Length: 508
Image 1 (tube, rainbow, N blue to C red):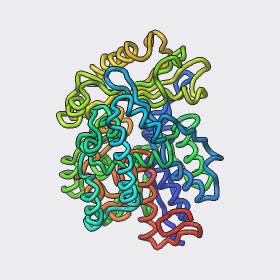
Image 2 (cartoon, one colour):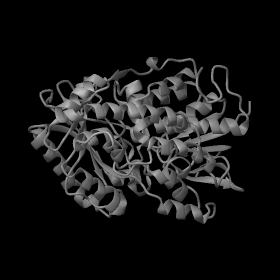
Image 3 (tube, one colour):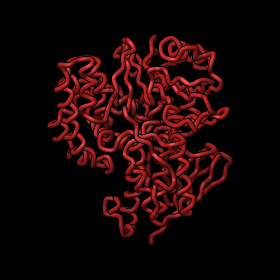
Image 4 (cartoon, helix red, strand yellow):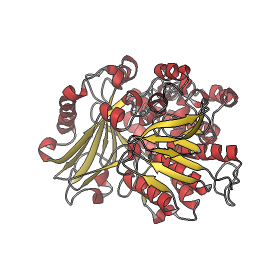
């Protein structure tokens, strides 16, 4: 076997996926991360007996995890449990009325009828239309887009399905009520996009959820990261935690290793960066090595929003509230708020929030009799020039005050554990360029071939996994990016896949 020395930078879900698959191909793989435990954006904080998932909490497509364990003849269930949620989400309008986003169509239709009986049939047609979107475009989420020809292959279907329209514009074809349109089109927010300009090709997320469900991992998303990390180590992978890569080293435009922040140099034949793709090019590759066009490109593409996330635990339970596990709270000025954040790069005066209440499903992540939450607020990335060190506390207090007045009575007097992150954390803690929480923004001109590639076009032996590259942000997408990287490496080095895995890298 053509074994190579591989270094994977970053133990997020994309890096873990790539590292496990490359290990399975027989390579010598070293996984390096600057933090003390794996997860990347899915890092889990532990504060005063509470466990808070740092980032992604919506888990779909369990088969993608199953594949990773099955590569080594193991079962995912041996490592962590998944609990299916229903409703998937509870979506609140500006009046505090809620829509239960259900998997079953009849249940969902009854929810639509509560707000707009005349939209029930249109809603059904909308959901049914996303089946075609899923069937046409899902296969491409696990294939690389390295040439313009790849992009042209899908364009006839983009035109035929009308998925060049924005997600909200696509929903508008089917339903009339503005709130139901928002219910149909919010999914881009989960991956760093604006529903009013993100292409409706992302409607395939709706079918990801309908086909495989929305799940919660017992113990939190951190339990998934720990399970994948454990699998990698059990199968012989080498890990270096609390170790930061300062620079990727090249010789004649070919990656040949990395230099750590302490000056240590490590040799490698292949480097996979699960660090933010823009940060990698602009800060981990020397000016002497990178072409000038790289800076021009990454200075001018669009980046996603950032986030303020407040993690808090309370001394009391809130089971008598109208909240569920995943709660999306839409403000009255929803479109204007998103325009401020994504287009004007300015702080909005109002709020739309995602509120996570995992202890309604799993009490093990909090002390007995306590409730665990995190509230996520959309904010612009660092181009907005907000002084977060000065204004952050007042902003967070405003968010908690809003929750106390509308959803969680006496909240602030009951908080006994708290942590937060903001755009500065994404920039300096997670090395995300401009503090963009989801890296490169999903848009029609930043999709497929026009998104940063999984294989560098400038350097041999350099590959990318994670939110900023194809297919994009979200747990299934970054897991798929690791799969794409491993298949590209196998193709380049002529590695035959073991029996039981087909030519697409899928288990059979």
